[in-house]
Image (cartoon, rainbow, N blue to C red; front, side, top):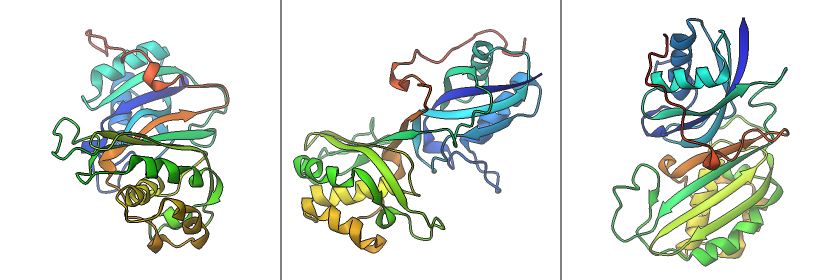
Length: 270
């Protein structure tokens, strides 16, 4: 029988060409997940993600919908997939999806985190997951600037050049900057939807504030101008993590509070 599952995924995006399967056959999260489901269930699956993370972007709480013909229950499927998936992807939670549920269209909000290492020396331990900015940052100025981005706004100035999206109004519920100069700094953004490279462009602009290249009170005017050329550069993908996707029914739990991935030393196909 065909069963519809919803999965919470964690992955290190460093070695992926993004979430979505590519025509050129590049390694993608959707691709390796579909292959693992195929091997676990012996049937061709339909795999849909809540968001199409770009190349190099990580996830703690990506949500995927999987339709496949199988008799495996959700916990059994999770154990089988974690035995088959490569080391840089894991299933954090699995359950049966409600009738008519869609991982992307039913999502109400997404939360992203951008990590910055502001130490003078590079940090090899952080290199895959944080952007190194060696010049001292005024974290207080960045935090002062951030609230101007909260609310229902036209974020055209933060949309990647060449994007074909015409409707550029989005609602951000929160934007926060925490940390300290010379150490770890993180920007957290939650909203109902995001334009291409929007979070990375927001971060690039906030970094200009932190480096003294832009006044902290300039973001409201930047939004009004709606001109991508006036905003900051796109921050590198390595610092960005999709932390959570939220739905009306409270699924999923905060991924940071989920138990470790389900593992099974036994043959997943046996």
